[in-house]
Length: 93
Image (cartoon, rainbow, N blue to C red; front, side, top):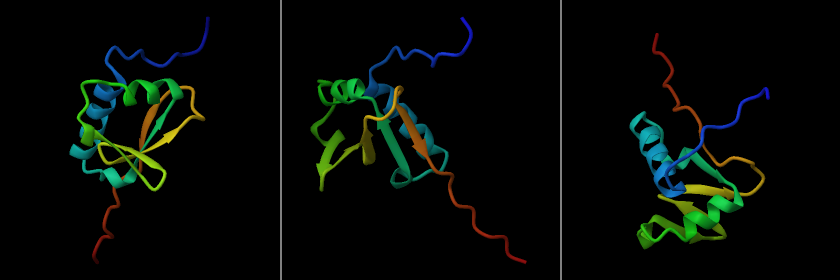
């Protein structure tokens, strides 16, 4: 077989994406600039994870958020955390 498969995750989606969000934030990225794109299976696992605090997942105005990061459901074959690069201020002459 040729081709690459995504690395398997051994932890739950909650643990895996919490670590990813925290790493991105530590690198200077704002949670408001992140999007968590989840498969339907990972969405179900996340919603049913008994280890999560009630405050970890929220729903407002039709949008699900995990740890303050917007969640988009479906349309992907592998769940992923996406983020934009932090804006760099223009150099002063």
